[in-house]
Image 1 (cartoon, rainbow, N blue to C red):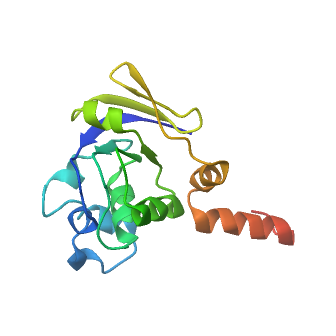
Image 2: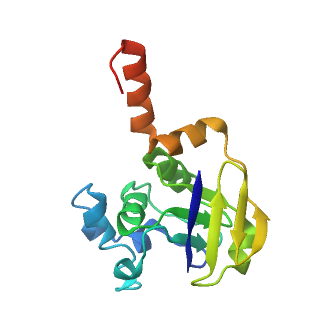
Length: 168
């Protein structure tokens, strides 16, 4: 599972309220949520994201509430992966459950600059930033299966259908 894009850079302790202010949580539609992504901090952020962009942040990304709307908003505006020095546990789990690839790599997070070219290979456990390779924390095979399927609901649906003889 590879992601190629450009870096969108953020710092430490980015909370879910900054990613998606609560007043926008009136739907579960990622496209609608995506238009409000980081809207209070950077009003033009969502419009400036190119599909495939990779959000790179510092420590404790996704802290705050346990809203699944935050990773949905990131997906909805076109973010293909989030790399951070560290994540809030609940954000990390919500992102995986929704099929948003996430990876931890503190050295990359310190080095990345807005607009840098980046390639993430979750299966190989590597990231390449502006030509420099970085190892990323390995994800368990079950997590990679969930991400490949596009989220936990999709992987469970596929498994249930396979077990019942219903084609996927």
